[in-house]
Image 1 (cartoon, rainbow, N blue to C red):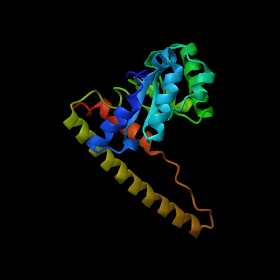
Image 2 (cartoon, helix red, strand yellow):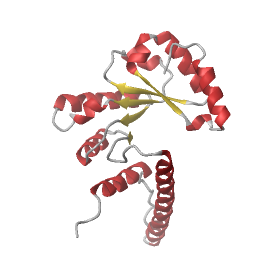
Image 3 (cartoon, rainbow, N blue to C red):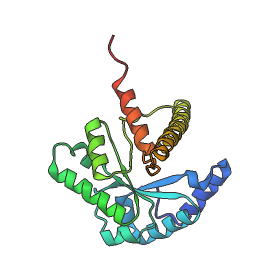
Image 4 (cartoon, rainbow, N blue to C red):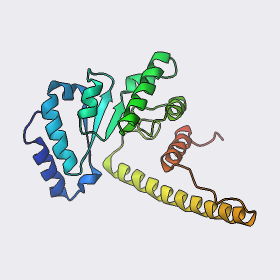
Length: 210
């Protein structure tokens, strides 16, 4: 992405409007290195994108040289932890500590945090324990053609809707039971994103051997 191009934001917004895509459905990613090459220009462009409703995420965080002050000043929505730290999270306490620090920093700045390159259940478990909110990687799905991606996303949407319906039913049953026993009504606390991840884990393991 040519972050230093003065007309970048206007051209991107025009392209989104031309295809009829809601700006809220688009998230632009830029690397830490690209920001550091021209931080003032990056701030201007990212502000224009966010004002148009387009999300902004810093990709490969941890591999560049941005300062905490710069990160706090940039108009961001999300930070993506570089996969190099994720790959070593099980074997390196240093990498785990760096990941934990990035997650805590993002939360302090009210930014969404995303783990990149998740390939194993162990990595997923570590990130979940540290408070990472979203992940991407082969554990969820491998690259696929657009038609397969559309089908995949549609099936995920249908499954999430089914899960929400089931949880509502379970919550109602627990609430009815609680009232009959004089207990307070319970609150549903399950997170859809983690349910999606568990389903992805099951798919990654494949069908049981015959």
